[in-house]
Length: 399
Image 1 (cartoon, rainbow, N blue to C red):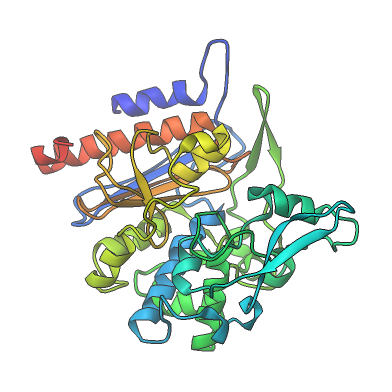
Image 2 (image 1 turned 180 degrees about the vertical axis):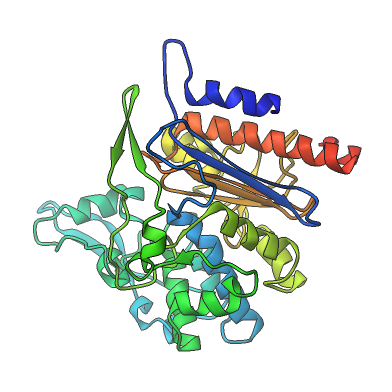
């Protein structure tokens, strides 16, 4: 066993003043030429399987898969990154910007002067946002006359209210959910059916679905969801709505580590998209955008969730499908690697330059857990050291 694997116990059961234990976690990584493949589950709970094919709610890690589907449609000429999306999504036409509240606590709005584009949706710069990301929208949601949000359909789940002009700032949003709807409308297929035919079947993925009620075999392999309460871990309910009506491209997939690695390898090996399109995904699409430039703007949990263990001194931007580190991270990923997160402390990265991808799968709440990101960072370093050893390529160490 490696020294890294020896140390997993100490990550999962730390000692000292601040004990933050970790539950079951599955780690996995692969490289482009197939010479390196790693999957292993850690956890000693007798009642929970340590099989690496345990099914996880992927939450926002779904966004990359939806982005692949979107970019396939761009390649086919069905979608345009810079066209007004309202021709396909009339729900997003002529939206208003929430500016504040008057003395009677009534919301005030102004008209937007810019159209939302697909690029805006994919880079979280549309002006839409999640309820928990913007205090103005949170306050709006609490007004007695506002009907509470539901979770089963896209329209019920997310507000179509802007909090900034499209293109003016980065603000985490349901934009990729809407981009998934665009795929459905231009292909006349449900998003999950499109993914099965054009993504999953291409890379031999069998265990992936939006509709868990249609895959009882996957439900039987669902791993437990845990919640951290002080220094204790308690089993809790999975945060996903079940059943759901819509295939939510921003956060609705269920799958496993082996299947995710097939998708990541499908990008590295250019099986899912042309190289030119892949390169476009891994480029910076937001230059000096407010909302991304300082990690200090966010609490620890939000910071960990957004920046995916990228050091605070590393400049970042946003690509298509995830955050981009604009300089290399020592002993870890190269510059212009793509990465993102899923709510139950799921983390992944894809390093196009060095042909390495990996992921950390857990089902731990709340999101952005520091102990989880510390272990994820240590795993990433371990992967690069292992690949360098197996390949005998010293260049991999010259970060």
